[in-house]
Image 1 (tube, rainbow, N blue to C red):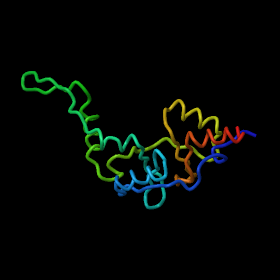
Image 2: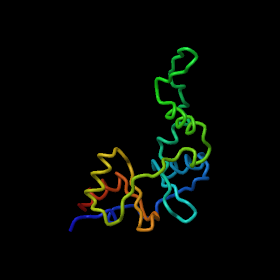
Image 3: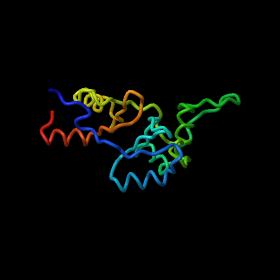
Image 4: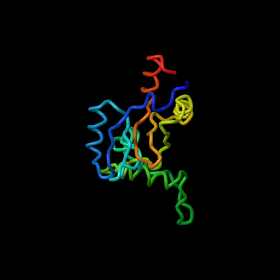
Amino acid sequence: MAATVADVMSRDPIVVHRETSLTEVIKLLAEHRISGVPVVDQAGQLVGIVSESDLMWQETGVDVPPFITILDSVIYLKNPLQFEKELHKALGSTVADVMSDHPKTTTPQTLLRDATKYLLEGHVHRLPVVDESGAIVGILTRGDIIRAMAGGLQ
């Protein structure tokens, strides 16, 4: 019988809320040696995910997009909306300011090979696992898959 996400996922993952401070999240990631956490609302429904990449904008700051001026008009050479998003992340103070909305999810019944394929092709490090109602029931990470492989579950 083929392994499913439920066979290897980490159950009861650490979660944060939109109003959680970034300082708290940074400490949480460092303390638990994890690279991201799901964001849930008060009902436990998944609303986003915050990762190391989202938090690193705090350290890097933001470069003003290059532009040229022609006849009193400003023409941006890079997308100004991307600049606005990066600025918001660099200046944010809560999870809501930096989290990624609408993360890709999986279900406990998904075949492990399908979830693994998505992790590789989607260049993501974790997949929140949700039930039929959208409540988070676990998280599947690359580390979970490697541990399953080491234990002989495939």
